[in-house]
Length: 150
Image 1 (tube, rainbow, N blue to C red):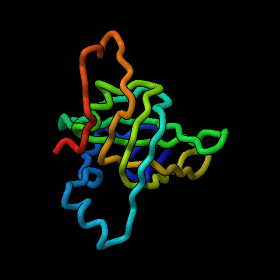
Image 2 (image 1 turned 90 degrees about the vertical axis):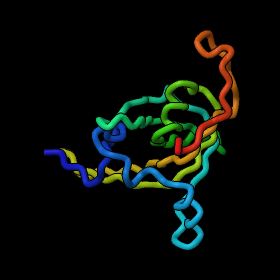
Image 3 (image 1 turned 30 degrees about the horizontal axis):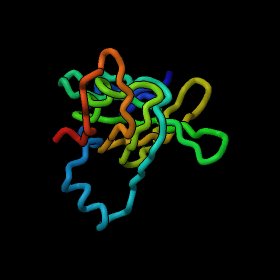
Image 4 (image 1 turned 120 degrees about the horizontal axis):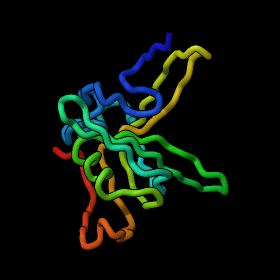
């Protein structure tokens, strides 16, 4: 029987789980210098359209996959965003868009029938589209980016 050791499912953030440990306030970000540092910033292109979902309490959560490359072989990074940033991603970002993401790393481990699995993902607290590609459904809209929605 599969058993998860974290709140998030391996392929998508658990929409039933409240984002209590994943939502950071500005005060929590200010204090990061006084404890261990867990921060990552990425600039890359979306490998697929964001998957926007809502928790039972109505909190938006989106899963992104970002491709970065400093060599000929791209690296893919799974990103989870909550609240206003998730809404922004679902409304304005599409596959191929250049984005900047700031957040922290979280490692998920789970057991399946074929053994233990592990994945590292970025829990983003800030997100910004860096290029603007007008499409038929977004023409005329402009967005500067999104923070944590607080």
